[in-house]
Amino acid sequence: MSKISIIILSASLMALGAFSIDTILPSISYLKKDFNFLPQNSHWIITSVFIGIAIGQLVFGPVSDSIGRKKTAIIGLIIFSIGCLLSIISKDYFLFLITRFLQGLGSGAAVVVSRAMARDFFEGRKLAQIMSLVTTIFILVPVFAPSIGQIIISISNWKIIFVFMLFLSIILKLFILFKYLETEKVMNDLRFNSTLRGFVEVFSSKTSRTYTIAAGLIFGILVSFLNIAQPLFQEFLMVGKSFALYFGLGALSVGIGAIINARIVTIINPQKIVLISLYLTAIWAIFFYSLIFFNLKTNIVNVMIFLIPVFLLFGLLFGNMNALALTPMGHIAGTASAVIGTTSIIIAIPIGSIIAHHYRGPIDMFVQLIIIISLINILLVRKVKY
Image (cartoon, rainbow, N blue to C red; front, top):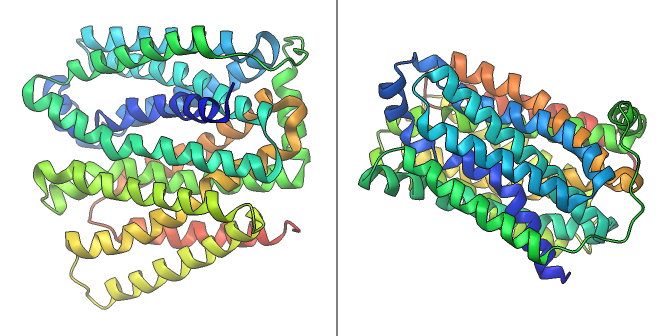
């Protein structure tokens, strides 16, 4: 396969879960009305998908090392399609959350194949560059997905969102069936303890262990933002239907950061990029929180002035952290990708759920979270030599 084809396919597979999450965000108020659940339980619409992604990666990582990336991706896409179909006919909130879990489970297979496929073809700084390019394309999803969801609910209802996602999964299945060629690598036997061995190997490597934990903590910030985005923008900042625009601007900032990273990572050590980005994030968050402490008026302009630089720096972090965690694990790329991805989500979900449950105001708690996690990650990353 060509380099461009690999990048596009990796990004598309990785973006599947993001599409499932971000497209539905503008319709959460409609879901509350139809399913009649308490506001503090709305985060399960997102959390259930992440739980599915975590389990999906854990299950399908070793599977992809055994039966190959292509078959694993197809199985995951079939599960995702079933989840979309069942979402359309759901009449109960609990059953709806199960369908969201199925979408996450299928997305988990797609994500693990995406990372492992990139590792099959590339390594080292080249892998970091490819992961940054993949992240750039991937970030376009949250830029446009909420707008797509907003358009759909404006002309129809939220169920048509899942018809749209079902269509996308079918297109992706056809592309993989007819275009993707496996690398000629010897497949590992599928054994019950292969995942356990993967955990042992990942956490035995100081580099993989450190950057897996660091990525999980940063991902916790992202999950927290996803959980509070709708009330933050629509209930506290009163932006109405412009929610998709402001959400997209934040996502676009991550994409710009990833583009910058793809250019500089070939000449600057990715570990240095990570450490510098963490320092800048901590300094900016501390400065903004000090303004809040001295009674800065919280409005949409101030919030976006804070969020855009933070998300731009996240664009420098995500691709590098995942690439650094995966680099020592080339011999078990699929399993290691599953372990890294699952561990990141296991770390992130409690952070996001706690913030969502206790969220009562515009952005104070979120800024505090960024400060704490940035400082913790600085301490972690500084211990890894480069």
